[in-house]
Picture 1: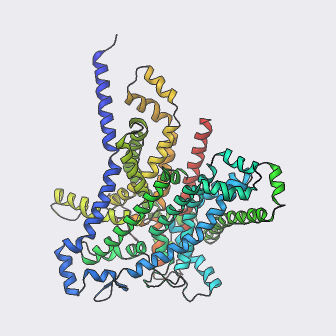
Picture 2: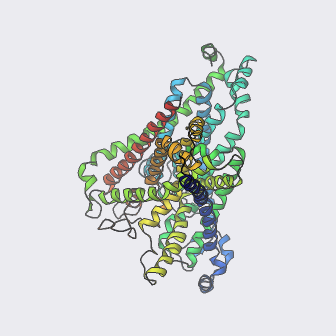
Picture 3: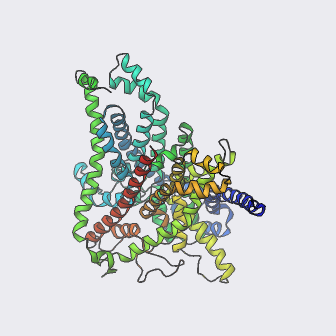
Length: 312
Length: 305
């Protein structure tokens, strides 16, 4: 006999869990909103907080000083021009992209077009391992080992500089770029490749004139995601770039990226003061810029993030 | 690509040059990994011993081990998993089992998850500080401790919350992949027997996808153990004489330990062997976690065929 009460209970259960699951899965949405709201709230202390305003008046600083070319938060009065941090970030990111992009791109072509099967099978765990190295370990490696090697090669005066940091940073973005580029090139339909080969094109011609153009959006998106990752990476920039806020585009000089600056100084500030607001403003800029980069990358290729995370 | 092509390849200079060039690029990537691993292993292994694992730092970090940092990292990733795994699992179940193909809500959730995955770790760090520590923590203090400082400061719980948020996308993506391995037949068989939607999910889909869900958890733990930026201001401390006894305490963390020792300690050279050894331990930890995850994932893929 069917027990009506049991059926009702199960139906109610079914309803409740459905609502519960839907509600709880909004956590991610809620948290993204909270990140936006809190970063915005803390960085707008410049305008909203009387404490910050009084502090700025006493120090003789205006908001225009944020556009200045010197950053020295410990000086009196502090210099808060963000230019050096921005140029530093550009320098380091630029080096990382310059190293990682050609390596990833060429390796992706090799693995998806030329490589025999056993090399393909071998390269996957290598990339997974490289992606699995914590950034603090890479930063440590750059600080202790890589910096000495690069100094020997380049003869630079500064042991730690934007070049060292950028090269180390490239190690974190190579796995992302390679995985996504390889994925994009490999997923070009086989008939396209075969048609090109049948028309007499060599494998290289096929790769450059058929496969890469067909996989263009994926390759561009891989580049954007890699760049965005390099842009916001903290530990390597903090450990291996020399941490000096110099307003220059010379990669042989030390740098202090925006992310590294937050990492360096946030522990020293008092809640809600002027310095605190400055660091949150920098964080807010980081958030917005990476947000835009990721949004563009995702426009190029849907579910891109899942692809980059799906691999270990 | 047939063998005939590979033979012809070297008759053409451009092609053969490009094959060699692209091969070299691949080789360089392999070399990067090899060099990093060998250098750290060679410099770190001599100092690695059982005592190093189970002893606390001594003599201003120049002697002793890293036991408190290992305990701290473990507590961090366990708390993080308890907080983050259920949410990640539920979100993935919603996306894959409940939301329809064109569900607007699911698209919003996906958009949010994609965004969470792209946010730099340091942004999580400052968000954790302003939201969990200075907002949530301070509210709890006001409500239950009449304003005295208990939760409104960097603590294990806030670092775990921040880390749970950072690893949420990893969990969601892995679990979704696991849910995808459950065939439609199995779901329909359960429906045919009169199971409700919830019963299908709870008693058929989740148990079938269990190892995949576990893989997601392991990947998240591996990621959480390696990230330092999110815990910089939300709970990690360089040296504590005692192990954390409550969620409101600060803790020592391996990655943070490496960072501070190598950049801010008074005598960087004296602690060098310890730094390399700590790095090696952290590397071994994350690699073995990843290794287990890879093996499990491979087994799932084979079983799916």
